[in-house]
Length: 233
Length: 233
Image (cartoon, rainbow over all chains, first blue to last red; front, side, top):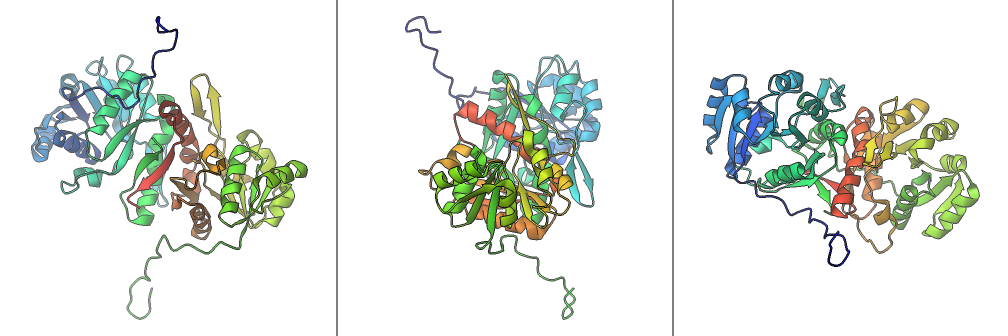
């Protein structure tokens, strides 16, 4: 309530996002295609990026290859050094990796971008984690972290291609705290062509993660690297 | 195989869609907001549309209101008279309605556009039907029909507003038969602004249906009528 006129304070502009230029971004699974692509795009946009891997040597080698000031470290050091930690590990190692990083990730803003998918001869299909989604699994395993979900629908091919200047897609950002989703939206907006769009609470992460199965079908039918735009926002 | 040169026949252009101008489209649940909106848009584009309701009188009254040659009938007659039948009933009545129309829908192309959602004070969330999705429930209940899924993400407000000339969105079309999904894509493309984009098999319908929960969050945050575009196709 505004004491002067009894009206509610003005609604916060959803595009008024924080300055995140100084935050260090870690990428767990940063030697995989998705992690490497995200690290490259964020570093190229000027963000300080540390990629993590189970092996410090592999992380450092991948970082060297990426350039743009990217550094490499073992997962735990990557987590400790970062303000925001993107989880881009394969779904198969998701739970186990996070379990082992619980302390290192305490207090951190975690951005889960893992898509639990199965594959058979008919293509990709959604897996349903016991917790509801990969992001909810992360939240369950990391009670002292602030868990969000984003960056699910990006083409690793486009992310990694230095000739691609802009990536024509929105990033759906999910989370239960506005301050946290605002940071992740701002991070997405660092990458030319992208916007971060708030798309609901963590309990609605499963369908966003699973939609990658549909995008794989789209890519196959149209020989494309499909992304998604949210219209009218 | 092409006998002449031993090469595979040319891949079919995914945008080469059939002419569906002569097909009669039924809309079950055509007196609800979504059904009414879809009926209006398709009829306005020149398609012959029959809306169905449990009560013939209510269907006829709604049809009269919509104009554009829309007719109204009891659900069973609506199904029998139509070549393509859009299912736009509330999720709560979905299974029961379809069970009762099994014979009337035999041989028909069924397009399920139902979103199984729950609502509480935090907003909308996905429900998971026993069969996996509303569309898979339809397929289980209608073994003699050809079941597809589409038209999930449309704003009923925009659909029903005669002042809105174009709707800026793609329609994700799911199904296991290319001939059927091609027809549904062509139907979506009748509505100015829309494209029908193939987005996978029926087993990947759940996340497309559930994503409406996320779009509701988007609409609330951005005061929008959000839709989705698939980029790079």
